[in-house]
Amino acid sequence: MPKVLVIRISSFGDVAMLVPVVYSAAAKYPQVRFSVMTRKAFAPLFENLGFNISVIPLDIKNYHKGIRGYFRVMKRVMSVGFTHVADEHDVLRSKAVRHMMQLTGRKVAHIDKGRKEKKYAIEHKQLSPPLRPTIERYQDVFDKLGFPAPMTFKNFFDFIPRDFFRLKAVATKKTGKWIGIAPFAKHKGKIYPLEKMEKVVELLSKDEDTTIFLFGAGKQEKEILSRWEKKLPRIVNVTGKLNLQNELLLISYLDVMLSMDSANMHLASLVEVPVVSIWGATHPAIGFYGFRQDIENAIQVNDLDCRPCSVYGELPCIRYDYACMGQISEQMVVDRIHKVLNKKES
Image (cartoon, rainbow, N blue to C red; front, side):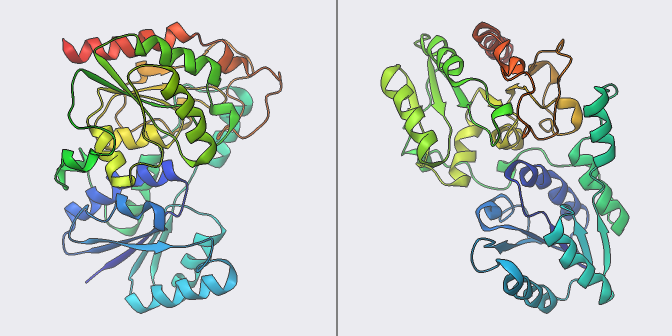
C-alpha cells in the first residue's frame, strides 16, 4: 500500500491552501494513505478530511526543535514506512527530511515556488499574466509523484457536521447579516491602517441588521479589538474564544469576510464564504489569492510605481508612508462589502 508523507509546516495561510489539494488526491486514491506533517496548531485542518488522511503534528518550538528534534521526526517518519514524500514547503527543515527519505529509496518530489519568477515580477512590476497560484504548484508535486488528481474539494464542512451549539461562546442564533473582519497580518505592509479599519467597522455597525465578528490572535490584537467592541454596537470580538475548528465553523456562517492578505482569507475560502481582501505591499497576481475567490473583491491601488514591493510584505516602505494602504478609502471598503452582500441577497 502506497504511503505518502506530505510536508507543509508553516505558515498558516499556506497550510490552509494545502487542504483542497490533499483532499482531492486522497479522494481519487482511496487505497493510498496520506500523512500531513505540519505544526500541531494546524492539525485540525486535516484531521477529518478523509479516512485515508492523517496528521503528523510538530511541536517545533519544543519537542521537535533543533537537531535533536530532527532525529525525533525522522524516527517517527521512518517507522511509518512511507513510500513517497511530497515536500510542499521546500525549506531547510523539509529538505532535511526529504533528502534522508530519498537516500533510503523513497520517491520524492518538491514544490517549485517560482522564486525567480516572483522576484522578476516584483522588480519589474510584471503582473500580467498572473503567476501560477500556489494551489496549482501544490498539485504539481502530487503529479510528479504519480498521483494526479482533479480538484474536487468544495467545502470543509462537507466532512464535519455543522453544530451551531459549538458557537455558544459568541452567538446563540444567526439573525440578519454577519460580517467577519480580520484586520491583522504578519507584516505591516499587509495591514490596513487600524484607525481607518476602525472607521470601516464603525460605518458597517450602523446597520441594525448586521453583526460584526472581529478576528485576531494574541494579547495585543485582542486588546485592540476589545476596545472597538466596547465602543461600537453590534460588535463581537471572538479572539481567544474559539478553537480552530470552531472558528472555521463561525466563518462558515458569515455572509462576507473582510481580510488582509492573510490566513483568514484562506480559511474563509475553505468554507465557500466570499472574501473582500485589502492588498498593499503584496499583490494577488503573485499567486497567493484566495481559493476560488472573485478577483473583483480584491481592493488595491493600481497606479503606484512601487507596488508590489515584496512577495510577503515584510520589507519596509521605501516611501515611508505606506501609500498602498493609505490611499484606499474607508468608503471603498464599505462599498465593496455592501456590493457582496447585495449580490448574495439578489
